[in-house]
Amino acid sequence: MSRQLKLGAFLMATGHHVAAWRHPQVPANAGLDFAHYKRLAQIAEAAKFDALFVADSVAAPTQTIASRMARSDHFEPLTLLSALSAVTEHIGLIATATTSYNEPYHVARKFASLDHLSGGRAGWNLVTSDNAAEALNFGREEHIAHAERYSRAREFHQVVTGLWDSWEDDAFVRDKASGAYYDPAKLHVLDHVGEHFRVKGPLNVARSPQGQPVIVQAGSSETGRELAAQTAEVVFTAQTSLAGAQAFYADLKGRLTKYGRSADSLKIMPGVFVVVGQTEAEAQEKCETFQQLVEPEVGVALLGRMLGNFDLSKYPLDGPLPELPLTDSGQQSRQKLLTDLAGRENLTLAELGRRIAGGRGHYSLVGTPAQIADRLQAWFEQGAADGFNVLVPHLPGGLEDFTHGVVPELQRRGLFRTEYEGRTLRENLGLARPQNRFV
Ligand SMILES: Cc1cc2nc3c(=O)[nH]c(=O)nc-3n(C[C@H](O)[C@H](O)[C@H](O)COP(=O)(O)O)c2cc1C
Image (cartoon, rainbow, N blue to C red; front, side, top):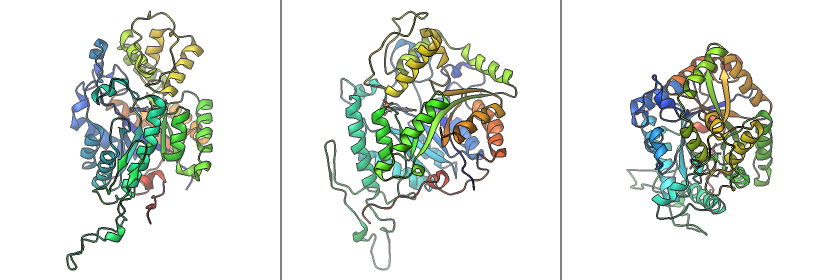
């Protein structure tokens, strides 16, 4: 069968548009409404999406302007996906968990549990935290510096994957007749001692259906790319143009050989923000409905956060983006993307805030299913993407627009599955099941 693209449904409470919660068709309490998420999961699974994807931050914003955004209350991702595992059968479940404010044993245990609960559908989006406020919830005055976060992340990954190999696949014999619960020869104690962690092991969860949950990584700076090349099986990235995405794709795939990896072992999935209409005019109009709801100060607050935790409230709304130092607490890749965009189009602060109010800088498409499919196909066929993480303005409506319009169009073109190929997330993504390192 010819190569097909992969799709993730990036869920975010009321939707990705910062003002979506104010739209008449959007349930404003969606962040803590399980019935809402259950419906989203079932819509995405019926459309054969590879996975649900949930971002995270372990802090709530406290600036006054945050009281005008729906970003302060939402489910913890692993808890949410564990519940969703019980009401879905095929779709992958990818949760974000930070390496900066967690311990590897906890993370290994929770994702292994989710993999068992779901019959092999778990994925871990490994991030180092781009929200400086998280530090204050974990006994620190300041966020861990960028380089240090990545150093910790690298070792964190080693420990987590090492713990996932604590047991060989058939270690637990549970033989009532002989009384052998497990085979001691198939237990491997990690005994990790490193710069950041000392972890003895073993994990108190048997090796999971996928061997190891899928490793997803988001972070596209130089250091982030190197970590991805070394560790990730899926990379989520923000890109604005075909040429930029092609360069990123070639760069990241090119780094794999030095780690003895094939190009196929890493799937690159840029985010794409989509507004779908029956006609292009209808799509534009729909998009404008959301844009009308954006207060300039809200757009600029979101912008400041995405630029790497800057307070831009003291700058004039109709002035240019001020010169900012390289962020050490946030996403360096996104800072560059947004700064380039402002310069290229000569946007004022308010205009830039408004521009990113929907997709936060991700590639944005507003149009008919055929127009959107054309662009996705071009990126997929021209070396820019192996698939996409789909962001929609509002939920559930935007996801229904995508699954009813764009998915069938992709299927007609033979670019997307009509049935799940496998049972596990790995099988559907076309990723190999990892060997146990101790065998
Ligand atoms: C597309 C994308 C999505 C991300 N999602 C999250 C997230 O949900 N939570 C989080 O703490 N960090 C997230 N990050 C940031 C990562 O934590 C990243 O490790 C860190 O900010 C450094 O990013 P950089 O390598 O681009 O500088 C994301 C980064 C990118 C590029």
